[in-house]
Length: 258
Image (cartoon, rainbow, N blue to C red; front, side, top):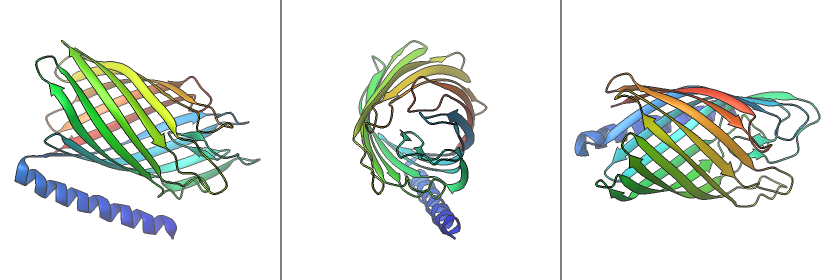
C-alpha cells in the first residue's frame, strides 16, 4: 500500500512539473528535459558481505535564465546486509543476515543559480541547494530528510573544462541514530572530442557521517553522446576507494530535451 501511494504521489508530482515546465517553456523559451536510466553498484560498506544496489531514476530538469531546477526519484532494489543509504554509506548497524528490499527510493529536489559567468574567460560559478526527501520504502529504518548546499566552479580551456565542487550536507538522523554534518567535494574535467561526443573523469570525496561509518572516495569516468538535438546518452563506470561507498558500479542515462 505504501509503495502504491508514494508512487502515485510521485507520478502526480512529476506530471504536474512536466505541465508547468512545458507551459513556462512556451512563455519564456525555457528548456525542459526528462531522463531515465539504470545504475548498479556493489560494496561491503565495512560489513561482512556486499550490499548490491540496483537503481532506475526518473529525472526532470527545467532551465530558465540563470536558474536550473531538478527533481529526481528512483525505483531501487537493495540486496545485502542493510543499513546503507545511497550517497551517504552505512548509517546503522546491519542485520545478521542478508535481505532484499525494493520500491520507491528517496526523491531529491534541487535548485541551482548561476552566480557568476564570464564568457570571455570561459569561467563560472554556480550555487545549489538540495533536499533529499525521505520517500523511500525500499530501505526501512534509514529514512530521513537531508539538506545540502554546494558551490560549483568551472574553467574552460579550449575543448577541456576543469570542474570543482565544495559542499556541506546536514544529514537527517533516523530514530536512535545521530549523524553529523559532513563536508563533501569533487574535482575533475570533461573533454569535448567532437560536437557529439564528450568524456570526463570526476573524483569525489565526503567525510564520515559518524564514528562508526567510513568516509567516501569515488572515481567516476563517463562518456556522453549527443544523438541529435533532443536525445543524449551517457554511460559511466565508478570505482570506490573507501569503505563508506561502493566498491564499483556501472550505469547509463538517457535524456530527452524539449
